[in-house]
Length: 145
Length: 145
DNA sequence: AATTAGGTGAGATTCAATATCAATAAGGTT
DNA sequence: AACCTTATTGATATTGAATCTCACCTAATT
Image 1 (cartoon, rainbow over the protein chains, first blue to last red):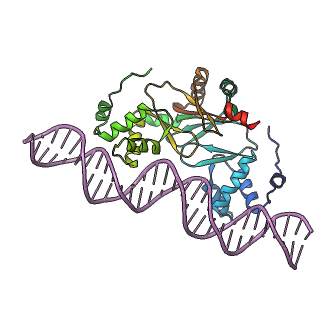
Image 2 (cartoon, each protein chain N blue to C red; image 1 turned 90 degrees about the vertical axis):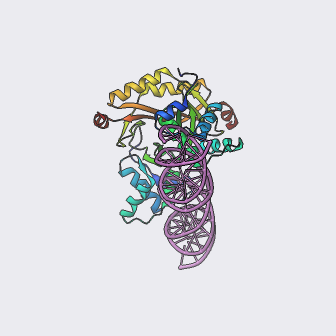
Image 3 (cartoon, protein in one colour; image 1 turned 135 degrees about the vertical axis):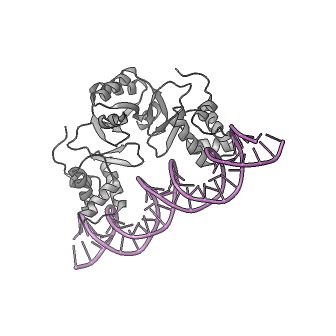
C-alpha cells in the first residue's frame, strides 16, 4: 500500500521548508521503531543516540510529518499523544488493555465501510476516525479470576 | 433502557460515601443539560446558580459518577474531557466536525456487534470503546468550496 | 564566503487535571 | 439538640504534556 522508500527531503522542500538534521532524525526514529511512541520517548531515544535536539523541535517536526500524512497521531486516552509512521504499516485501529497497557492492532473491512455509510448519512465528509476497543487482555483477564 | 429516576443518595451511601450538596449539584447539572460538557463548564454553571463548589470537587464528583456508571467520560480529542449523563440517553458514538466543532451522535448496531466479535477474536474482555468519525459537517463542507 | 530567512534550543508559559492540608460539614451517637 | 468522628471541601500549589518566545544558529542560494 505504501511505497517502501520515502524521500523526506523532497517532501520537506516541496513544503518550502528546510531539510535539517533534526527533521531527518525524528523521521528515522519513527521509522526504526515500534508504533505508539510518545514525544518524550522519541526525544530521549534521539538524545541517547547523541543527536542534538530539543523537545520543542520534536513536537514541531512531528507536526510537519502529521500534516504531510507521513505519521499518524494517536490519542490513546492516557493524556499524551502517540505517534506512528504510516509507512510500512497498513491502516488499523487499536485494542487497549486498561490493566497492563498492552496494545493490539485490528482492522475490520466491514466497520470501515459502515463508517463511510454513517458519514454519508449525516452529510459528513470523513477525514479521519478514532476507534479503540478498551478492556482486559487475555493475561489480565486471567489475573482477575 | 435506563430507569427514569436515579436515587443518587442510595448509590453514594452504598459506596460508603457521604451525600453532599456539591455531589447532588454536579449530578443535577449533568442531568439538566446538553451532553458533551467539560469540567470548567459545569463548574461555572454551578457558580452562576450561586452554588458553592470548587473545581477540585467538580472533578472529584465526576470521578465518582463515572466509576458508578452514571456518567460517561468522553475524550473528543480537544485536550479536555467531556462528560454526559448516561441516564435518559441511549448508547451512541460521535461524529465531530473539525471546523465548527459540531457534534452529532450516531449508533450502529452492526458496528456494536462487530466490536464484540473482534474483542472475542483477540481474547479481550470488552469494557468500553471509543469511536469517533472525524471530518467536516454539511455546512463546513459547503464553505470549503 | 557572504547573506538571509527559516530553524533550533533553553526556558518560560499555558492549561487541564491532580495533590495538599487546614477548615468544614455529614450523619450517626448520646 | 448538642456532640463527635471522620469524610469532604476549597484555596492553592503542583504536575505534566504541549506550546510559545526570542536570541542564536544553520541550510541553501548567490
